[in-house]
Image 1 (cartoon, rainbow, N blue to C red):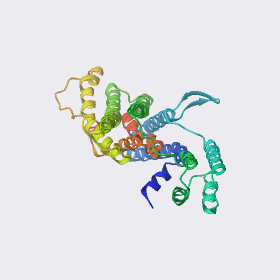
Image 2: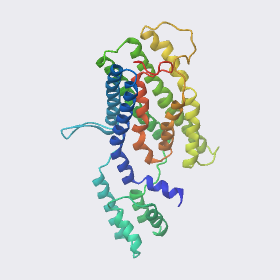
Image 3: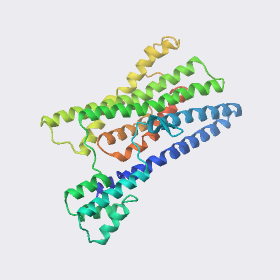
Image 4: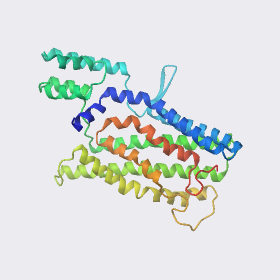
Length: 348
C-alpha cells in the first residue's frame, strides 16, 4: 500500500471529525489517570501532603484541560454561541450531508457500471473510505472535472499555504498553545490558595515555567517554522531552489524549529525570568548561570513533538490538528505546578 494512500486515509474529513470528537475523553482520561497516579505516589510518604497534592492536581489538570477545550471548541450557553473556537469544526451529520450531495452530483455527471466502485461511493456518503477503497477510486475512476470536484470533498488535497496564510496559521497555533499554559498557571495559583500553600516563590515559579513552556516549546518554535518556510517560499519564487514538496517543506520547517525554538527558546525564557520575573516577585539578584533554575531535559525534547505537529500542519497534513490540545496539555500542567529542575514543583 502506498504512503500517499495512508495519508489520504487519515486526512479524510470524517476521520478528522472522529479524532476531534474523541479528544475531550482522551484528555480527561489521560489527565485524570496521571493526577491519580501522582497523588498515590505522594500518599506513600505523607497522607496529608497527598491530600493537598490530589486537590492541586485536580484543579491544575481541570483548568488546563478546560482552557484547552474552550480554546479549540469555543463556548455555547443555552444554544447561544458566546465565542468561536480556534479549530474549524463541522458536525458529523453535516459532513454526511455534504459527502452525499458530492457523490450524487458526481453520479449525475458520470456513468459508472462497476459494482465495487458504486459500493465505495455509496459507503462514503455515511462513513470514511478504507485504504483499499481509496486506491480503487483513485486508480479506476476516469480523470475528469467531475472526479476532481468529488475528490475535493471526500479526499481533499493538502492545502499549499502562501506566506500570508503561513503567518496567520502561526498566530492561531501560538494562541492554541498559549491558552492551556495560561489555564495551567491560573489553576496552579488557585490550587495553592485552596490548599493554603500559596507563596510568592511558588507563584513566581509558575509564571516562569509558563513563560518557559510557551517561549521554548511553543511560540518561538512556531516563529522559526514560519520564518524558514517564508524564506524558502521566496527562494522558490526566485527559482533559487527546486519546488517545495510537502516532505521538503517539513524538513525546512523542522530546521527553523531547531534553530529558533529548541536552541534559542530556553535561553530567552530563562533570561527574561532572571532579569524581569525574579525582581517582580522580590527575588534577590543572583550571579548564578542562566540555566541555574531551568535547563532543558529529556521531557522538554519530547514536548517538541508538538512542533513536529506544527510542521505537519504548515506542510498541509490535516490529521495532526485534532491532537494539538493533547500535545499542549503537558506544557500547561508543568506551568501549573511551577516546575523547576532543582525542586521539581513549587509546592514540594
